[in-house]
Length: 361
Image 1 (spheres, helix red, strand yellow):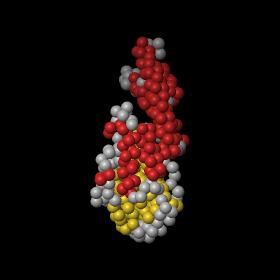
Image 2 (image 1 turned 90 degrees about the vertical axis):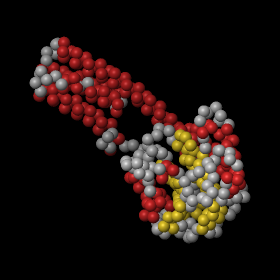
Image 3 (image 1 turned 90 degrees about the horizontal axis):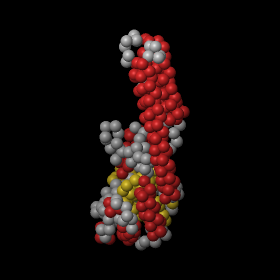
Image 4 (image 1 turned 30 degrees about the horizontal axis):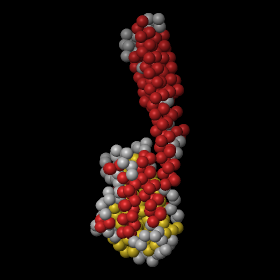
């Protein structure tokens, strides 16, 4: 995500100008009010404190210097600058400014550290989430990953696709947790999927193998106090090349949606399985089959989409919005979904969101 501060009203220059304007306003009030009304002068300690919460050390120091200058101007109009009263007020502004610069420096250092951690996680995630080709077998596929704005740690949403001798298999999942541990868990599952999905005879065996692999991986991280609480929700899809049906195994994950014309079907499992990594056995996995028609569009997604909230706390109505873009290509549909989802949330997602759109030709 690119942030163009110079083109945004709440960028660095705008914030500095806003705080400097408050210094000028307080100074003007101090000049025009009678000398015995000593309200404006003490208020000049507020701009440096405000700057510490939103600006870096140098801009904060600039605001502090401006506040001291404003204090001097008010003193020249109403006080003897050698008087004790003015000296105390000026010393207060100076002390607050010094503390503000110190706090701003600490905040900037912490923000840089968190930003570096997120960049590392994003790089790791790009390596984990290998691009899915737009054409895989007879299918046309598009993907979208949207990182959360409110979290410094990236999530563990995942997707992948592979070919068998006569079908295309896909997985979409979501690791419980955030940050590099979640990315590592996602990498382990995707590695297992890519390694065995093309050779397992059916989805039940594939789901069993992935469950065993994830359970073994999570049990091997027992030094992590949260390892016992970890799991991965996932949905596995198998689309034969004849494209007459889609077979699904759903493991605690939101069901895919099938857009047919202007109608949306929720492909809900009759017997949904628990998330991967809980080690509950093969008998928990069940395959559901749904018919497909030419022109159908399958949308697999993570809960970051359907659980995105607006300012009133209303969830994003994915199934209701999807028919708006019937007949669109997978890429165009995901572009519309991205814009609409950001509009619903006011431009800030509370959780990562991943989507995979598949067109049946």
